[in-house]
Image (cartoon, rainbow, N blue to C red; front, side, top):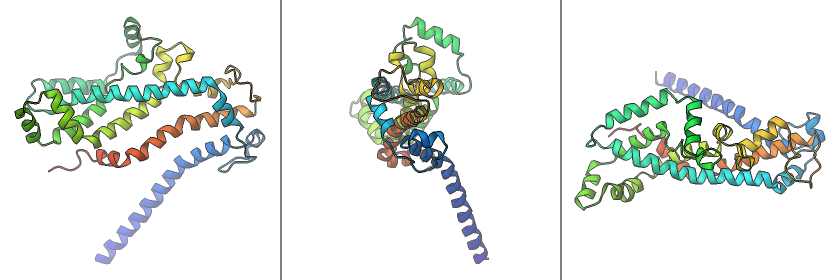
Length: 291
């Protein structure tokens, strides 16, 4: 009986590893193809010879991207939205999640129900646009950060972690004369680094990929984030409106430039993950272990 269980367990692990490997390849191989095309000659791309390794190796597409001021401006805007927007997200989410995690605050259950409803029913687009216009946020970067300052999902993740902190620590801080804000800043947040890192990654990815909000609220092309600039290159194949004359634009070279811009838009957020990996893994276990 023991041998049978051992064999079945081994078969399960083998099947599981094979499935995860195949699933990983479906995600990794297209990305590898993008990398290969971004370093391949335009003729090889046009003939469909590029798969997972560069053909007719060239740096021309990246030279175009690095020399294009409009792409760098869009890149800088995306970085600004990601950094400032994530800071706003974490500050707003933490200050709301903390009182909702404490049993002594009256009305927290009603507030949680109201917040939960926002996960089920979202506001219509036209009233949102009218509100942004009346607040004077259209054609400003604040329109990409303020309306999405708090995500209900991330709020519940952070609230769950705060609720698991020992209440004795909070009581000790109050006895020592700490205000609620000081308790949150000096006691709760330092103990919540895994949860903050997890929520911070979620917010950072969301802010870096801002696309629909920019299309809705921003008409000034100089304020477009990188994702909208990428959309212009992918949809319109327009490489002539950038002022970059150092690179000869042809119909064959468009796709190579598009692949290079895709990598420029993807790699920075990928680089962020290894630095926060240990916090992210700890944060994903929030609520899975009960004492």
